[in-house]
Image 1: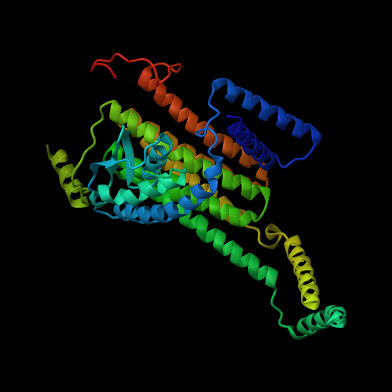
Image 2: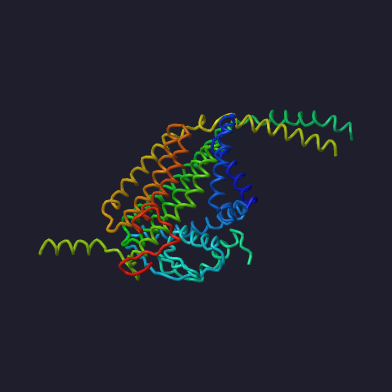
Length: 160
Length: 152
Length: 134
């Protein structure tokens, strides 16, 4: 718990310095007060755990976002082509995608990635599967999501 | 060896003088770099604007709620990110770029969550998605319908 | 070896001084892109105005919420571009704040319409509706 509190404090201090850009004593003191107050509130709510301070996985997550950017670009082109064409041939369909990861974090990341890719939206989520609505029927293939599930699980630090 | 090391700075300086003496072509390199940067920023912003407008048109055109989500997602992801990337290229390595980076990261985190929340609420409220193949009406069909309505 | 290191150090010093000389000329002094940015801001306003059509004529509540959410994203972009038009990047803080508030407002409205109350924890309690328990 103290470990994650320390990580959270460092992250919040870096965030304060990056956003304010001033190094005057008064503003620094105000920043210290804010960080301590937030830490105290977090400790009181008992949420100082790995889910609150996932900053150790930031490099992994950023490298995952680079891969996701390529996927988003491809999906965007497909959706633009479908929407802007005059006859607008779309075929909305639903599919259930099984979740590969076990913990909540990787499931959240997976559902977020599905929603972030245009053309697929995660509508409902339960214990072991996600209900996905797709704009085109060729996007609604459950096997296509396996790679995304593996990579998103890896990006938030799941080692299976 | 030590002697060489003592000499070498002067040698390098001499070489630099020679280089500056020979390159007398009048190319304003900072200006060329600035134009390249401006072109890069402008193309990025224009591409982002294209996706923003495609998303808007999709939200207006698509037939039912669940399909409109996809068009809105298009605006949120590539449209917003490309516009912010263009602004980042304009501002260079400053604190402004850091803020823009933070803003794009926030958008990338919050927009899918909000989209999922809206879709999930609609699904739980019992809004049924229209499935199957869909084709927009052509202009002749719309005209025929309007003519029939006008006749009756 | 020594000569190599000295020359390297010298070259690095030279390079850093030239880089500083280049970076002293600001990009905004060389090319003024504020007119382009103004045009982009107007284009964003046009797309926001188009979106009002869906906001007013959306058949269901969720269409309207989606339009409001998309409108908020475009407002954030407009704020960013407008800060560059007037040349005061301080306004980006407002854009960040608006992005976060847009998200929170969407969630709050949805929660209110789902539960008819804001102070409800989604982890505890069972809601009696017409269809049964949720």
